[in-house]
Image 1 (cartoon, rainbow, N blue to C red):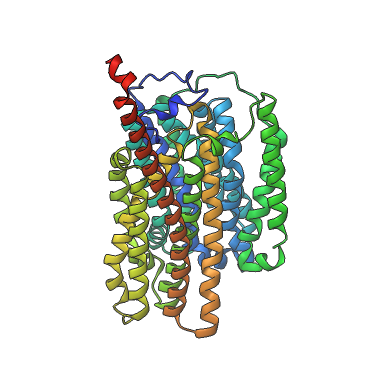
Image 2 (cartoon, helix red, strand yellow):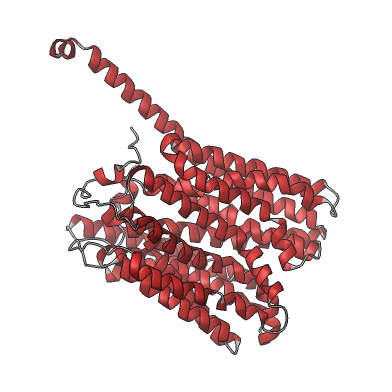
Length: 505
C-alpha cells in the first residue's frame, strides 16, 4: 500500500520527533532557495555556448577549455551526499548560506580570471560550492512544508531543475549577444554576483534554522570512500572528449569496488547504532526511494545529452548563432515550465501515474521532433519540430517534479539532506553519462556519413531508448502500486464482512 504524500514521511520510523510548525515565511524562503538553485544548475550548461570565445580570448587548448564545463560538473557531484549529511547533522540554513556566499565569490573569480588555469580552478571551487548548496534545497522544502503544500513546493523545485537544464543555451546565447565583443563571456559569470548577493541577504532573514537532533557525527572514512567512488565514475566521463573513456575505462570497475566497500561500511555503522553518511534504509525500507532514484538517473542520461546534440546540430549543421540555437529549443523549456508547476498540484492525486504520462509525452515529443528534423527540408525543419518539442516539454514537466516528490516524500526529515544529495548525485552521474555519450555518438556518426540530420537522428534515438528504460521502471512502480491498493481493498472488504467484525458492529 502506498503512503499518501500528506505527511507519509513523518510516519517513518525515527521521524516522530520531527515536529512541524508552519512558518509564515516559508513561501518567500522557498523562492530564495529556488533562485539560488536555478543559478547553480544553470551554470552546468550555460558556459557550453561560450567555450569557443573563452578558448579564443584566453588562448586555451580544446582539452583545457573543456575543463571549464566538466570540472564544475565533477566537483558538483562529489559534494552532494556529504553536503546533505552535514546539513542534516548541523544546520541546513548555515550550510546553504555559506555555500551561496562561496558560489557568488567564485563566480566573480571566474569572471575576472586572467588565464585558463585560474578559470578552471575557480570553476572547480564554484562547482564545489554549488554541490554544498544543492541538497539543502530539497531538505529545506521537506523541513518547511507538509501535505499538499509539499507537493506544490516540489513542483516549483522541479520546474527550476527542468528549466535551468533546458534554458542554459538560451540564457548563455542571450548574454553573449548582449555583451558582444572581446571578453563578453565574462558576464556569464558576473551575472551571478548581484543575484547571489540579494539571495544571501534575503536568506539570512527568511530561511529557518534546523533543530539540533544530536546526530552531529559525520562518517569521515565514508566521505572519503564515497568521494573516491564517485570520482572514479565521473573522471572518465568528464574527460570523454579527450579520449578519457578509452584511456580510463579501468576506473569504472575500481569505482564499483570502492562503492561496494562504502555500502558495507554504512551497513556496519548502522548495525553498531552509529549514524552513517548515507543510511542504507533509504533504499531498502523507504517507499519509492530506490525506484525514484533509478527513474531520475536514467531520465537524466537522455535528457541532459539531448541539448548538447541540438546545439551541435543547429550551430555546426545549420550555422545558427548560440542565441538562435537556444531559441530553437525554447518550446521545450516553455512547455516544461508550465507543466512542472501544475504537476506539483496533481502528484498527490495521481502519484506515479503522472511520471508515466510525462515520460510518454517526452518520448513522443522528442521522437516526433527527431523524425521531422531527419526528413524535413533543413531550412524549415526547426519550425516543423517546434510543436513536437513543446509537447515533449510538457511531458518533461510531468517527470522531474513528480519524481522528486514521489522519491523524497516518505523520507524522514532528519535524513532529508543526505537523501536529496544521493538523489541528485544519481542525476549528476546520469547527466555526465549523457553529455559524454550522446555528443560522442553524434560526432562518430558524422565522421562516417557527413550528414548532420542522420547524426542527430541516431543520437536522439539512443537518448529515447534510455528514457524508455526509465519509463519501464516508472510503469513497473505504478502497476505495483495498483496491485498493492487492490490487495489492501480486498483485505479490508474481507474484514468488514467477517462474522466477528459484524458482531462487533
